[in-house]
Image 1 (cartoon, rainbow, N blue to C red):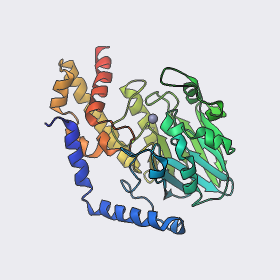
Image 2: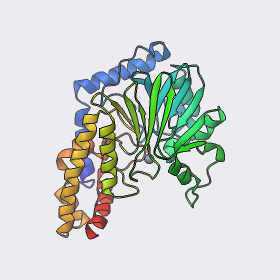
Image 3: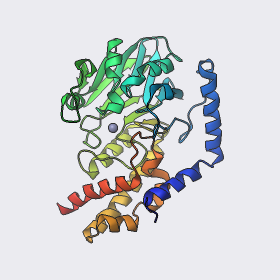
Length: 337
Ligand SMILES: [Zn+2]
């Protein structure tokens, strides 16, 4: 094992995957569609799963250096990706609904991408959760006249202040909040906003399900790689994923909080992988193994090529080894109970 341990192996898996012809074609298509711009906005092919959304990791965050790319997902739903969260877009005669707002400086670029498919007003912004890579542009969109919508706890989280959390402007806070579920009806589409029931990523996460288009935005509860458990316990995220799996169908396109489009089968594979990994680590902890020993035993071995943290499109550069350490600590507390 090299100085980077698991991370090295994951990077090998990552570079290998880029050699596949499918990915090469996807990159070629991406380059072409970006360069032809708006003309072909309606002619783009659907994003293949694992395809072509730009990866926000390690990017220079200077707005001039970021391209916000619009992609058709399925039905009436599009996704905008550049840096920070994926933004889902539903546009039509009733105006535009977007999910999440990335960071504050990118609003103008995001609007340029939106204008490729609609000249209508942004009427609604739904936030999946409170983190600033998903809510940073809220105030800008509110000033354009959009109504901000989120789960009750998200508003409470955004109102909390601390040494690293200066007060959020009142205009950036949700105007409308909901408890368990909220239904919206616009552009011929039933949109269901579902509170993810167990605290896992935050306490106020929402899934946004565009039923007519059969597309769901999950926020960071599901990022198509090993889950960050910030609140709650290891079962919370499994329960949230099971709710997602039950709520959607085999052809639903999943827009994760960051990274590439996924399917229900992808989510089920990650859920099953996590159950195996959790069993292994719990067993190792029960035998008294330290983190270093667990790391050497490599409990994620056959899953890293597909689900390592480095494979996701997260902005913060967090390695699989760092993830394993935090997951070990979560499970160590649970085993001691
Ligand atoms: Zn987050």
